[in-house]
Structures are given as structure tokens and as C-alpha cells.
Image (tube, rainbow, N blue to C red; front, side, top):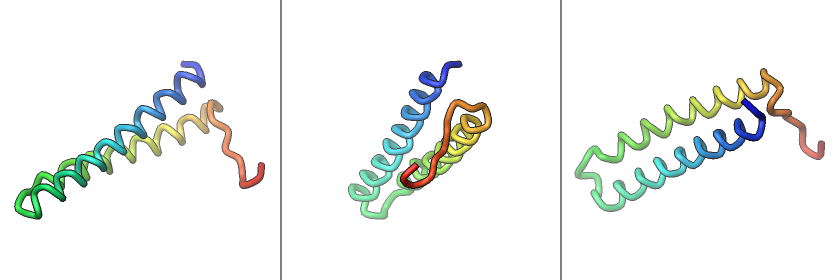
Length: 72
């Protein structure tokens, strides 16, 4: 796997996180608390966020990502 492909995968996973967050917001606003549909997108968001963190750690460990400090 190339570092560029890995970064594209990271961006796609992040977009899935944002999609689930938006879906939960939509259900929360339309259902007005009468349904449990808001919980599932939030649960998926947490799971995908954990996957994203694991992928970032893997990328750092494999040398595909190089963290830097502020102003670095």
C-alpha cells in the first residue's frame, strides 16, 4: 500500500464519520425524540471513529504518516 492510497482511505473514513454525524442530526431534528433512529448513526460514528484512530496509529507506525508539532 502506498502512502497516497492510505491517505485517501483515511479521508474516505473521515467522510463516513461526518455522514453518520449528519444522519444522526437529521433524525434528531425530524423525529423530535419519538424514535430511536438517532442512536444507530451515533453508534456507527463511534465505531468508525475508533477505526479512524486505529488507522492513523497504523500509518504512524508503518511510517506512512509523519506527525509534527505546531509550527513544525
